[in-house]
Image 1 (cartoon, rainbow, N blue to C red):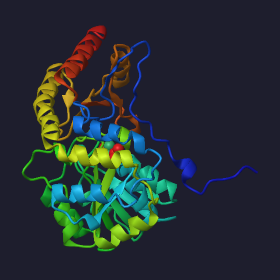
Image 2: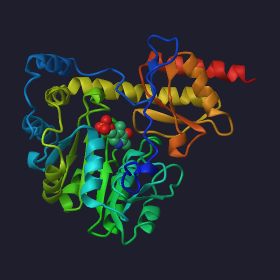
Image 3: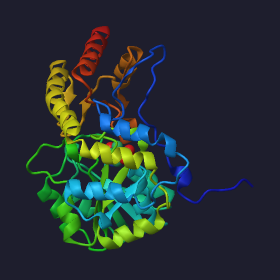
Image 4: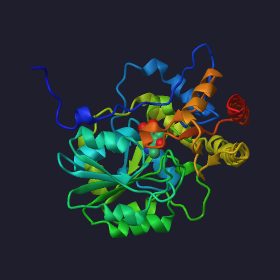
Length: 361
Ligand SMILES: *Cc1c(COP(=O)(O)O)cnc(C)c1O
């Protein structure tokens, strides 16, 4: 008898990240993981390098200076901030602390895949609520709450669809959930959103003891390699996360680079401005090719190939050194997700799509 993992674990379809390599292409254009087009802040790179002589030291287990910097930037109490090795770790810790065998973790149909993976890894059941027009549907989410629901995840904006719920809609979701159910608003792309009716959820965290906001340094702050995320929590949930997390879960290099990245406001602004300029132009150009682009407020767009073969387009682009993401794992096999890179990178995607369409005439 070989060792057996706990129930649920072998049901997990392992997470497949965005591709980073294309055969025969030394420097592919990488638009499969929603990384920042401008790269990290030069100040973050300096802070990272300056740490090289200190690699024998354990990190600050409380991430004190980093939590202070986040607190200053967003006007939050650092005592209610918990940092993690990417927001992925915080998603996993929340599920592990609040859900167990037979419990339910609820999210919307095309929500981020980590929610299901984390639920299954503790023996909980991932439950999905249908979406309307590739957008989370508050009424459907509320209709799928059961006695066993412990955590509801809402990626806002959502990856991979790019859609978002307004502040009002999220408040209505919170108000409709039982008080003992955690609402985790995963605002990984919040920095990119330029909409007056959007909120990352800070006010909902402040309003009660059952809502958490998750943020990451992997997207607009462009520090994906370092694995750094944070949660803004009610005091009780911060206390729980601090009990279950590893004592040194955030590397010191991530802490120092994170502070520098967050304080380099001009660099983040430039990243967001670039995205605001390139995304609508790119979406319009793709639509001019006869493909549908779902509306997005983040740094990626979902391209809908309808009854055309999305996978053949993806492989064609890959052969030409351009990597964008397949969406079968999200139940959207007829779509591909393209990160918004620089204008030149997006020209390469457009040229590739044009050439692919030619091959199919
Ligand atoms: C990228 C992403 C994250 C997590 O990123 P980390 O690198 O683990 O911080 C979380 N949620 C969503 C919706 C994402 O797209």
